[in-house]
Image (cartoon, rainbow over all chains, first blue to last red; front, side):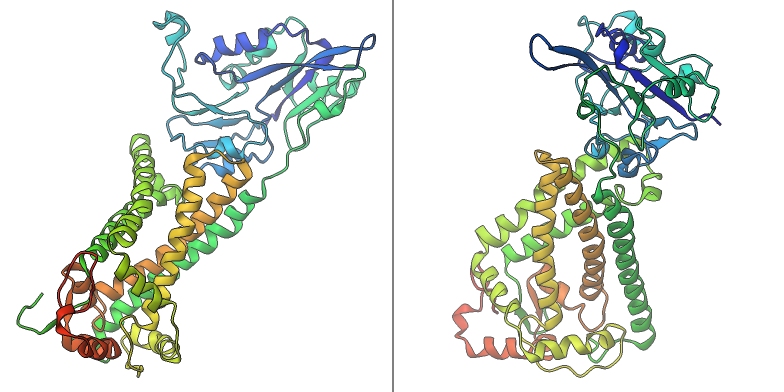
Amino acid sequence: MAKWGMVLDLTRCAGCYSCIVSCKLENNTRPGVNWNDVQKVEWGNHPDANQAFMLTLCMHCDDPPCAKACPTGATFKRSDGIVMTNYERCIACGYCLTACPYDARQINTKDVYNFGEPAPYELEGSVHLGVAEKCVFCYHRVDNGKMPACVTNCPGKCRIFGNLDDPNSEINQYIQANNTFHIKGTSIYYILPEKMSVDELPTDLIQPGYLSALEKFAHPVGKGILGLTTAAVAGGLIMNTVKGGGKNNE
Amino acid sequence: MNRQKETILRFNLPTRLGHGTIVIFSILLFITGSSLIFTSFANLFSNSVLRTFLGIHRFSGIAFTLAPIIFLVLLGWRHTKEWLREIFNWSNEDLKFIAGFPKNFFGFKAETPPQGKFNGGEKLNSILQIFGWVVFITTGWIMYLNIFSATIFGWARVIHSFAALALGGIVIGHAFLGLFHPDSKESINGMLGGYVCKKWAKEHHALWVADIEKKPQTEAKETIGGVAHG
C-alpha cells in the first residue's frame, strides 16, 4: 500500500499561482475558496533582500486532529494516507476547522459562481457548499494513476508527489538528494531557498491537548456516568415495582 | 390532581413555566447534542436530519439561556430568591437525608429526619443544575460565537460534552424520582399544577408545612411573582 506525500521545493517556485488555479479548476471550488495557498515571503534588507513563495495545503497528517474532532465520522484518513471528507456526512459543525493546526479547512456558505450564473464547467464534478472542504491530494486522479492537478500544472516542477513507502520512488530519491525539511507528523516536506529561515515553515504537528481530553476523558468518563445513572434508574424502577415502593406509598 | 385531597401550593407559575421550558429545551438539547457525541447515534440519521439537529441545538441553546433569566429572575425572583437561600443552607438533616437516599431510591425503607421545602437531595440537585446551567451557557456560547482561539473553543467542547453526559445522567435520575418513584412522584404535581397533596408534603417536607401553617392565610394563594406557599 502506498503512503502518498509531497515535497514542496520552494527553490523552484516562481509564485505563478498555477497550483491554485489548477486546483480550483480540477476540484471546482467556489470563488474565495482555495485548497492550497501561495504566500510571498521576504527577508533581509537591500542589497541582500530576498523573496520566496511559501506553499501550503492540507498536510495530510499521520494522525489528523480534524478526523479526531469530527463528530459524524465524515473526516477520515485513507490507508494510503490521504485525509478525506465524506461530504455526504459532513454537517458543517466546524469542529475540524478549529482542530486543524494548519488552517487548511474552510466552510463556504456563499452559493455564488465566478460569473454570476454558473458557467458549464463550474457545474461539472464537485460543487461544494456548506461543507468543511480542503485539499484531498486529488485522490480521484491519484487513484487513476495520475498526479494531483497542482503537481501536473506546476511549470517550475517544484511539487514532487509520490509514494513515501517506496524507497525507489521519485519523491524518496528527491528527499535523499536534497536538504529536505520534513514537517513531522505530516506527509509534507519542504526544500528552502538559501538563507530562508526555517521559522517560515509550518510547525511540526502537535496534537491539541483538548482532543486527547475529549477522546480519553470527557467522552468515555461522561458516557460511563450516563450509563451508570441510567442503569441505577432502571434498577430503581425494577426494585420499586417489585417491592411496591419505599417507606411512603401514595 | 385529585381535588378531593387537601392540597398545598408548592411552586408558583413563573417557577413552573421556567422549569417546564428548561425541561422541553433540555430534552431537545440532549437528543440533538447526542448526535455530536455518539457516532453510532449520528449514523442513524441522514445528513439533512443531522444538520437540522445542529440548528435545533443552537436555537434551543438560546432558549435554554433565556428561560431561567425570564421566568426565574425577571418574573419569579421572589420565589427564586427563597429557593436559592434554601438550597445553599445546609444542615445535618440534609446530610442524613442524602445518606439514606440510595436505600430509598431502590425501594428500601430509610429513616430520614424531617425536611424543609427542599430535601437534601433536591438541594444537591438544584446546586448541580445551577452550576450546569452556568457551564452549559458559558461553553455553549463560546462555541456558538466562535470568536475566541481554537484552544478555548476546543476546551469549551470538552467541558460542554462532559457536563452534558454527567448532568444528563443526573437529570434522568431526577426525572425518575419526580415521575415514577413511588415515594416522590407526587412532586410532579407541584411542577405541573403547582399543588401537591398536603399529607404527602407533611410526610416528606414536614418542616416546610409546619412553617407555612404558622403563616397568615393571606399568603395562601398563587400570584405571578408572589409567594409560593399555600
